[in-house]
Image (tube, rainbow, N blue to C red; front, top):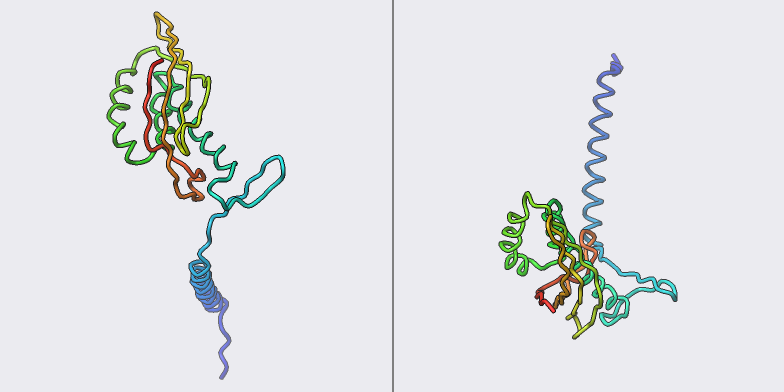
Length: 184
């Protein structure tokens, strides 16, 4: 006697078969991905068109290093009492772990001091100079406004950058390894 499968048992069988096929596909795709070892390539676009950047001394990388220096200084020094923690956090993404550990307590104390105060600080870049290969001087005009007074200060920030591996999560090839502020 021949027994025909019931629709329920056929559905269960198809679900199990589908699960096995998808699991095998996932394992095979993972093996191929690990064998391929994808790498990040850098394509630069300038006034002459798009090109693959392979040299560390490429002019576009120098511009990128300068832009990291500018972005760090502007992010760190433009804040209000309410945005200080966010600004320091964003600047912290551009700084090395060692430099962050050295400055973390200083940032925490300043953040506590600013709580509940009406304070706004704006920084405008006056000039950026490359001192050495990855060392920059950034001259700024800082305007600090509190409830009772406004002060303007000229500040120079000396930055040392270091190369950092470029990843999908962190597309920048540089990070700030050290910085110092000097009032002019």
